[in-house]
Amino acid sequence: MPEVHQRKFSKNYLPRTFSAFEYRSFRFLWPGTLVGFTCRWMQIFLVSFLVWELTDSAWLVALVGFFSWGPMIPFGMLGGVLADTSNRKKILVIVAFINFLACVVFSVSLMFDVVNVWHAYTVVMVSGIGWALDMPSRRSLLLDMLGNSGVTNGLALDALGLSVSTMIGPILAGFLISLVDVTGSFLVVSGLYIISAFLLFNIGIPQKYRKLQSGTAIIGTAFEGISYVLKHPVLRILAIITILMNVLLFTYMPLVPVIAIDVLHVGPAYLGLLSGAPGFGSIIGNLLLASRPNFRHHAILVLSGGMIAMIGLFMFSVSSWYIISFVALFTLGVGVSCFGPGQFTLYMLLSEENIRGKVLGVVSLAIGTNPLGSLWLAKMTESFSPSIALGINSSIGIICIFVIAVTLPILRLPTEDLRHLMK
Image (cartoon, rainbow, N blue to C red):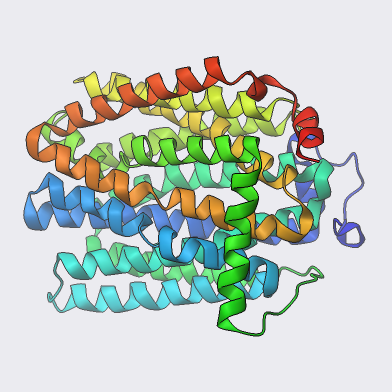
């Protein structure tokens, strides 16, 4: 049930686009998550830039994506179990603090000039482990706060925070590299993680959860989520689409610095602006979606968002002009702003309350296929240019999403009808 006892504003105080901010805990969760997201995108940008400077290898840069998202496979399902069986707020705070420690250690390594690519991979891998562990808890908290009627608005605003961070993270990182250096940039990231932990610590919401008695119970509980998703056709299809997007689309980011430097011939500042273009596009899309909290066709939102994002990536892959590349990544961001909230709303509304965290753990597992896509993309860069590799990925994605949309009419039904089919 939503935490109505914590509502401080009158119901009409805020426009409906921002109605979730009527809840006190959401007013701490949202900025805390925003700062944490910003830190993650800054880390990916900084590490990608650093690895390119150290190695001049597109293959090694592409591996940044592998180590950033690789932990989703072994830790994603564990995160889902923890969301159902542990204090969710504590999970968020602990993850933020561990990320702070990892960034401090890496900053010290940079100060003493003893860093190598494996140190860089390690710091983004720690961030990836944290992402896998806290994502189900963060999304479950939204439903705890807002209930079924408010979760679409809450997820859209959560995605808005992700979009803002996707924009300002790379821009801030590029600006800091120009102003100071990578070492100073990581010190800033360390400080931001502390701010995130403080904000998340102030969340106050009652939560019911059951404790598991053994490691065997944890393993068994984790596989409950997989069985549940495989049993239900809509969730099964949705998981396949999530895998497609993570293998073919979300692997692009580490290659943006390579293309910006070698194809578009820009420096760190313009590179940061270019990397922030998807975030800017997502902000626009998320605001539009948040203004429609009663949106009824989330499956169509997922398919259309995926298609728009793939088209944007294809445009970026064939562009040799900075402004066209910026528009292409902006378009990609608009698509992601539809796909992300749409998929998570479906996962949460179509799953039963007692297994929702474990279902989100399966989502983390599907997202965890991203490293396989990163390896595939990195391998292609050995035979083709980074631009051609992204063009191949986006073309495959466009074809796959089109086939799914045409051959599976069930995805055109309103979400409420899909919920009845699940019963």
